[in-house]
Length: 617
Image (cartoon, rainbow, N blue to C red; front, side, top):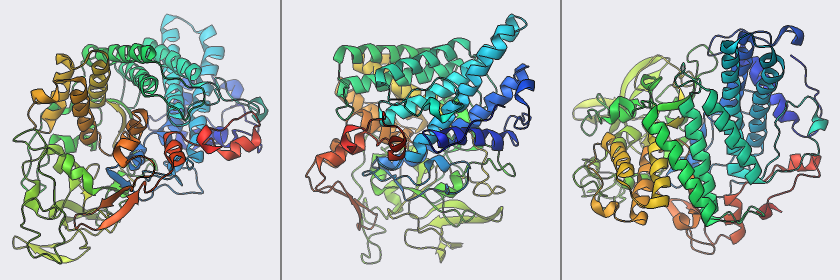
C-alpha cells in the first residue's frame, strides 16, 4: 500500500487514524480476511479478494465512530454519562469518543478527536472507492466481476456518506474530501463546503449504494435497505433543519417548501424499506413473557433484542459486528452499562430518574401518576407508599420495555466474576455489596456507585456468564427497523398529518411493550401524533444515541430545559435529593453552542481557510 506522508499539518491525525485502524483490524478481521499491511502496492488491487480486504479496513475505520453512540444520549435528559470506557494513548475501539463531554449542556467544544476520527473513516472509504474505480473496474473481466466490484464501491460510499452525515449533523459546513490524501499539503488550505453541497454529495453516495448493494448480505455488511434507510434519514434531518432553522450555522436559511419536499422524499424511502425487503420487528414484535417484580428469570423479547441473540435478525438493518472473547474487538456494553458486580464493570452510563415516568401503563396505554421520590432511611413508609419511587409495586403493570431497559430497587440481574456466575444480585440504591435477605433468600446487593438517580440499566447487560466486560459479541445496530417505523411516521405526519399506515407502525412498536394501541386523542392532530411519536422514540430508542440529535434538529433544547435566563432544572434521585442542575441562568450563547459544535481550533491553526461556527468565535 502506498505510504502516506506524515507531518504536523491539517488532517494528519485523520489520515493516520484510518490507516492504523486498518493495520490493527486486518490482523484480526471479523470477516476473516487476510492482512494486507505488508503487501506491496504493485501486487495489490488485482482481485476482488484484494478489494474486499481493503473494504474491511473501511468498515474497521467506520465502526469506532458509530458503535458507542449511546454516549451521545447524555446530551438528552434521560441518560447520564459520567465518563467513557475508552482510554487515551492507544488506538483502539472507542477512542474516538474519549475525552468528550456528554452532559446535557456545555458539550459542543469537546469533540475535536471525534471530528478527526470521522475524517479517518472517510479517508479509508476513499481509499477503497478510488482504487477500485481507477485500477479494477476499467479492467474487470466480465459483467459479474463488474457488479461485484461496484458492490464494494457501494459499501464504501455508504460508509463515507455515513461519516459525512455525522459531520454535518454536528458541525454544519465541513471540508469535503472525495479522494485519498497522500500528502497533507493537498488539504492544508481546504475551506469548509456549504452544508447543502455536502448533503447532495452524501445523497449521491447513498443513492449509488442503494443501486449497487444486494438485497441481502452476511452479518455486518450493508444492503439496499441500509442505504435506503440512511438516505431517508438524511432527508428527514434536512427537512427538520429547513423547517425549524439552524440560526447558528451562518448562511443557512429555513425554507418551508424545501422542508416539505425533503419530508416527502424521506417518507418514500422509509416506506420502501418497510414494504419491499421483508423486514420484521424482532420476533414479529411480540412482547414475549415477563417475570414478576423482583425476578429476572424470564425477560421480555425487547430485552433480548439487545443481546447477541438478535445478531442477524431482520430488525437490524445495519450493524457493526464485534469479535467477542479473545479477538481484541469485543464491544464493551457490559463495562459501560453495568457495575462492579458484573465482571468489575464501571457503570459509565445510567438512567436518570425522570425516564421512569415515561413508561406507560398496560391498562390504559397512557402515563401513570408521577412517581414520588422518598428516602427510605428517613421515611418509614417509603417502601410501601402509593407511587413512591422506592416502592417496587409502583412499577407494576408498565410497558414491558421498562423492565427490559432499567432496574429499580429490588430488581435482579446476574452477577459475574472471572467469567463465572455469582447468582442474582438485587439492585438497591445506596446499598453496595451488602448482605440482604429478600423473601427469605440471602443475596449480596448489586455493587455499583456509578448511578446517582436510583436506577441502573438492564438494557445491554448480559444475563449469562462466560464473557468479560470488554468481550461482547453483540452486533451494534446503527440502523434498525423500529427507528425506520418512527422516522416514517414523523416524516409522513409532517406532510399530511396522521395517516392510518403510520399509526399502525407506531402501534406495532407499542405492541412489543404489550401496550394497547394509541387512543384516538393521540392521533387526532399533527401535534398530538408527533407527541406520540416522540414518546415512542424516547422509550424505544433509549440509550442508543438518538435523543441529543433529535433535540437539536427539532430545536427543542429550550422546550426541555427552559430558555435563556431561567432557573434551570434539577436532576434528582429516587430519594428526592438534588443531583445536577442544568441550564441555570444560562446565556443565549451557551444555547447556541449546544446546537452546533466547535470546529477544532488545532485544525484552524493549521488551515487559515477553515472558518469557525458563529457561536464559537
